[in-house]
Image (cartoon, rainbow, N blue to C red; front, side):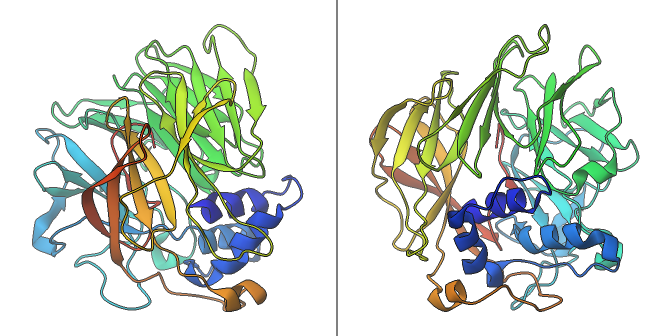
Length: 396
């Protein structure tokens, strides 16, 4: 949801003046965040990021140790999703054989696998935090992740077992932020970006040609044209923006950007390659409680609003939606969350506790939302602490 992205942007040393809405969200959600206590004064910024990276997810269904095994070299079927586990919930139990910051893959037939060669999201002993990303191809047959041994990103075909290593190293230090990976449908292109950007660049790899290009960082990769030539990016804070970079491999320019007149939470690029869905954000200084906004469809290149609909059919109490994979030209997946209003927390200052436990696991619901009518239909549920560390096939 909004606070995660906004707070990360606010923490950047060279970020613009803090937006009031972002400050509201920071205060309101401070008790929901997961904090990692770091041992070195030089890691103050990383500690703050640890406070914000509260997205902790588990796969649905049995989570006993016998149901989880290491990913085989080959012969794995298409994935339903991937989730990351953290092991010290403030209440309730963690999964059996829980490993902090570990990626688990869940296949469509319900099998669950660890990815032992993927860099964990926590330093052993909980002495530091890093956000090691993972992406899944739209067909569920390929994954990309940061390989601890390779010190860069690795593409892995789950059925054949073929592995492809990115043609350039990516320092682990670049992972101390909210990172994003986007894998093209054919597995040829891999985009890496992060927020806040600090000093390092974003990257796009052509894994077939062994080429790499630097990108402007601080954005979220939203979509790539089938030929790999046009990249669409989105940004949440301090203002909602969209960016299009054409002629990606032949020109050096950064494309064109458009700043939107209001704040949005974006989906990936729609199947038509031109439009993008977005949930309107409603937070204000005198309105500390979250409220679900309308669903809009925008032209991704111009930012022009094409239409807006009221989302209908959600369970009572839903206050935020995270838009994910498109299921077709008219339906987009949305993970739903209910955030209670905490007026007391809104009026108090930041929590000064040195260390907090991970949030309790709870049930999150996925819907298919029709962008033409606003009608939502329930798809499935997940056992989760929050919905930011679940990865679905396609751009996230």
